[in-house]
Image 1 (cartoon, one colour):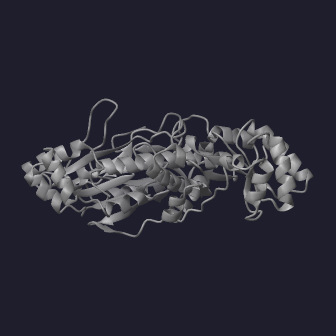
Image 2 (cartoon, one colour):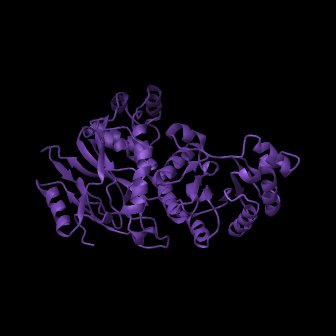
Length: 443
């Protein structure tokens, strides 16, 4: 991966830092979201595992450096700095697949100023994209109430974003993806049988079904190319009682599913599943489930990867501390502009849980011995269990355990089932389900 997947101003700033001797100054950066997307009650973090993999190859090739020199983006001194660039700092952050709140420091980077600076665009592009997908997917998982969910967004987004989206959706609880590259890269189960083009390629719908069933009954027949009721009838007639599934992609999906279920059951196809697709989001899924529509699995594409459900979490990446050149001590820095404030200093966070459900997060700025212990004691005094939601990802540039998408999926399942309070699992717009108390916050 090229380190040029970044913004021009990162290198403009680095050029000055190198000239002023600041590039090697110890510094701390934090990634956080000031708020959740409008109406969202929770966010589900994804992308940290993928980010760690990308950092392995975050270097500048000689031809890239030459290109930057030719365009006067950098000077000779900065070129020498980039020639040997490798991230040697430390990264700590929330576990992938866990919940986060407004102001949660989901990623903390301790590194020389120049190194930490250059990670900004990569950190934000990965975390904002993947968390947008995982958070939307989590709402769909809650809405589906145990029905299967197939990620089908590959044709609605950038080809590489599609792979990342499949990974994020799987972490949140989707059962399969249509994207084969995601299946190969991350070990995600893949699924897919036939589109309308397959049916139209044969002289008749019946001929298409017979051709598809040659590979065996464990397939899904698309029954709505012409007339859905006739398509269901033909699927039953040709597929027989061992037919695995049918898919409905148009019309009133709830009513079509009810009619299909009645026909299937009457013919003895009680085990044949019904899959519904077509511009689905968490609200439509919820409505179908609430109305008792006999749909066994939902395929979701546009709304997951680029539609109205795909709301960016708005993560930002801010410098919060830097070593004073004169004393060497870390100096806290913070942005004070209206509606865009940050809190200076490296944070330690602890969660307060009651019966396994998250009640609040509290932060302290690391300044004096005993502060973290005092934070934990204050939570226990209120009858809450104290938990550290973070894990070390990198220490002095070395990985602290390989990222595991399947472990992240298990964590997300537990977070949605136990850590997220029952009242926060509703889809209606509302406030964040818990409070993150910053050192300068009393709300």
